[in-house]
Length: 302
Ligand SMILES: [Fe+2]
Ligand SMILES: [Fe+2]
Image 1: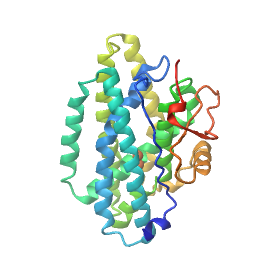
Image 2: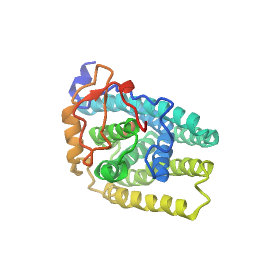
Image 3: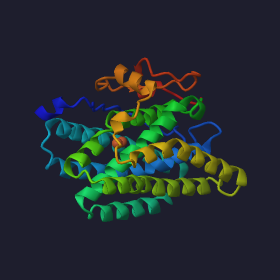
Image 4: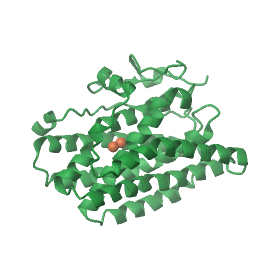
């Protein structure tokens, strides 16, 4: 499509694969942190299709060709994200036997169906708000990667970091579309809280369910670790949310991490040969992958 060439946002169809030996506790000695991500992942096949539907509807009214092209690219990237999350989640549920998560998935169905009946302005503000939260997530997960993911399963870590990198790549899109069509400060500000709630509420519910199933919710030590991780997450994400709520907020003003810029420079186009930019979690610096590998060439914990 002619309009797509106006966007610098790239759709990478990376075939992340989660075979049966990918475990729910994919970070050594940090099941609470693994489940925090697992819980967030559970929300993506509900949240991201909602973002796509909202963007698709909004683009019918967008005249600016660059904003329009970025919106198309946003749809394409988010489409890749939620499909990989669906594969990851299916393996997670099968591997951990977390059948109870079906209840949270049903709650998300209802939540997003209801949200879909709200005005386009409200839904776009929700989308832009959620996208601003992901900037804080990125700062936390990529900035602290060596501490958080040391010796973790590289197949999951590479997937997590890829998603965060691409969230950075399209960080301005929902905001630009909202500003182009509405530009109402109070609605956009409320969207920051609303969009964050949409993922945190269900993500935490899913996380607690999995911890309970694993018998980790009984002990004070595990609960303390869970809350400590939560506080750390809020400490990293909070400043982004506060800045996103300012009247003069512009996501362009948020400086991207060097690791993100390097990843994007190294993989500026689709990784067309069906291989994966695999992060070496045993390297103390956990650098940007210098090469891609086929998923079946990677093993972990054997
Ligand atoms: Fe995404
Ligand atoms: Fe996104």
